[in-house]
Length: 394
Image 1 (cartoon, one colour):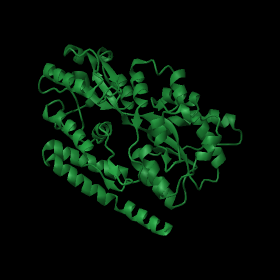
Image 2 (cartoon, one colour):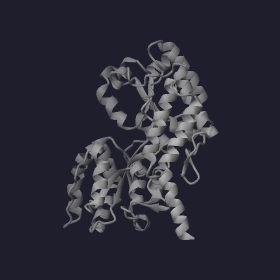
Image 3 (cartoon, helix red, strand yellow):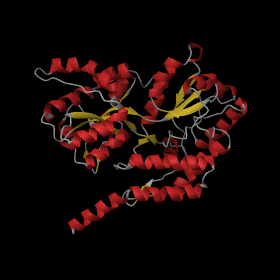
Image 4 (tube, helix red, strand yellow):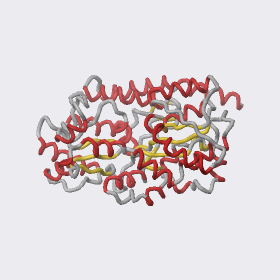
């Protein structure tokens, strides 16, 4: 997908050299069109042999019975030891105890911040607890003064609120992922903390609406920090002026207690085999090749995508680089979102009602009640299928 579809082609010639008689044709698909194209290919029985999938797409294709189980292949593979993959990342590829994909590259969310602005507010290092972080953000906001802010939180992004909820112990869904659980005390506590960031003026209620260019405004000090993923490392290295390159840093997320870092989301992309592929053995060889530490490191150098294999981090000295080291720490504590086909629709509803609460269009309790109601509608088919399966079993 996307730029990866272009860059991975540079790794193909070496694979073809190692496997005489096997040829690889890479079809590059824009991310914006990929989901529809994959579903159309499945319906038309014209799927490719293997595919790159975002973590939230795996459950949907599993529900369609489109993907090959990889559990046996992984157990027999000497080149893909399970312990070499971050546990929280590996979790995203397993549905009901069956592995359907192999992690290729990873991402997660953590803090990007202007350490010079934090230092000017007498914050020498990013705090490790949310209470200390909140106090530090107030100091930064006071130092910056209006109309600048300590934090940018785009209202279109559901990830920060979900991360806070996971840290509070929220399950998000209940009863075997058949109903929303957003009125739970844990999710309410997370929403309260989230809304306070806007009420206290730490983050602008307009989200990114008043931000002309995120990277330029970060360089200009319009906001001192934001949450983002590894793709931002390359963007800041390219877009910030040379005079600002030493002023920004990364840090893992704070936690509610001493168990640092706090939990973040498991993300990235994995490689999977389509069940109808007539070339599964060759395609599996290509997956093993792309997921080998040497190739993962080579792909990181081409794309900036962080390796899923821990050994690639060690060989590439990514664990000691100041900015990628924060991702290494954060990836030790990541969790997947509920592994259901409907998750992206659920996530859109979380974003919708969180924004309504931030803007004051809905009271928090009303927003959570409506969120639960809408999510219950989204999951209605899931409940029906479960009831049908239970009836067939009896």
